[in-house]
Length: 635
Image 1 (cartoon, rainbow, N blue to C red):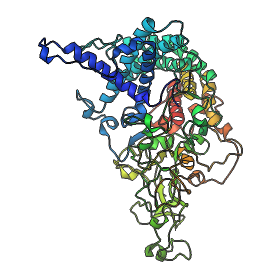
Image 2 (image 1 turned 60 degrees about the vertical axis):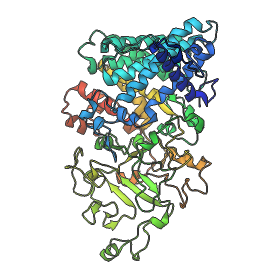
Image 3 (image 1 turned 180 degrees about the vertical axis):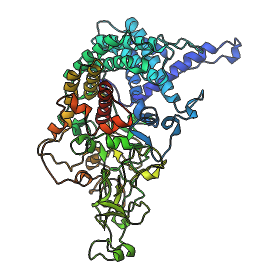
Image 4 (image 1 turned 90 degrees about the vertical axis):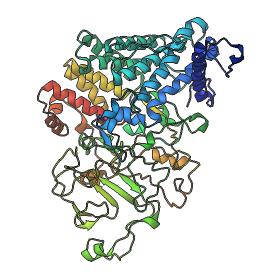
């Protein structure tokens, strides 16, 4: 999906034409030699003069939208946003800069954080041109006059907001470049937030309630980021200077957040957000999404990167017997691994969001490579009765890999060989036929698994290069053209109204109005509970798009030599939780009846204790941050 009146093939081209024209301006400014034989006529397809026309401004705005894709384009989307946080640690690729805050972040020209700086200032410059040129060159009677100006203000505010969150105060450049500039003064955080909020306010005043097309910035998008900017400014991050802003900021969070919630109702079921079947389908137009970066299956629009988030979260499966990499399972670069905190923070019996956000089963798509029962297992009597040596442990289309997300105290699982092998897990004394990864073996005590010396089970023991983990499913993409393709086809959510629900709840909590905070927390928690009659063992994610993918056929997922797909439509809910099958609702268990349910939450209390929290306020704030993880992990 793309903004209105735009040739999809021109989106990236417009962006590069903009860069080329700025480079041309800089080159001309540097020319000082007067010898005629050195004079050359440099020509390009377009110059900055095109941005003094209405059509040119329209093109520039469209090109600037490409920067909204930044956090989904490449590895920096993982580094800048999901490393060095509670939810994820390094996976098979150990990125110490962001994950451990190593000295690689300190150099003057570090590649670790330079992309964010370059890309956001690369957004701010066209935004400055838009803001400067629309009043001068755009017809004031045009139906899109206010929209274009509002988009300019929004994009500039967005760029500076991303910068200040990472770098603190940055130089505020508010006018277009007319030549080479080499000196900038760093503004304070306070000055940056004043500008960011002012720009978002102007955008809010100018933008339409309904966009010209899917993907266009709207008044709700401006309201969402106004709420977020006000909440950031009111937080402890800026306690050295924000006292005079806090009261008004929290009121603004509530005002703007409620507007977004009303305009963008939550989906009825959390899984609707991730039920991706094909590009431009119903899943990409759900009411909850406020703003999304636009991607598609049109390879002319991919540019250098495309949507690459499907690469970074998957757990490695391709080197486990019976499993070949295919389109449905993703190309598993495995840059991050979910932490023990991410497992512990969910009530995995009653909260469906865990099972709708993570992958716990994978099918066999290559039966010839499946492991067999060996003589040791048969002789020891741990193989199924009547099993012959050499008999395959599972077949094509059967579950080949499963992750057991159990709790300490579970006595069912033991280690047959003492080597923590995924192929030597015993359940009640019998060999589990699948490659099995267990969170806790019999006799293991609870651990936060924060170092290689205190790991549990057989997937946390692989630190520091953890290539097996319970993988996030939110970005899985079964509609790519090839199993090795980096180019994802899914739109990527930048803002959704559940975030506004949590921001409003946090604002009320910061005012110590816990009654209203609980009212808003229940909006996401009530949805998170299982509905009566719901199949808790069903798994859905974007890997299922392989079924509609023209590059996949015959029940396989685009990999020659396979006879099924890696994508699996079940999970390990019942086995992990060790409970009998049920179709009863869990919405009452998820509902908060009073502040006591927060203060005494069985799920959250171990986290309170780990952080040594004792006050009512601190526990409520911690609970809300935990709720943000439960709702928004990885986004």
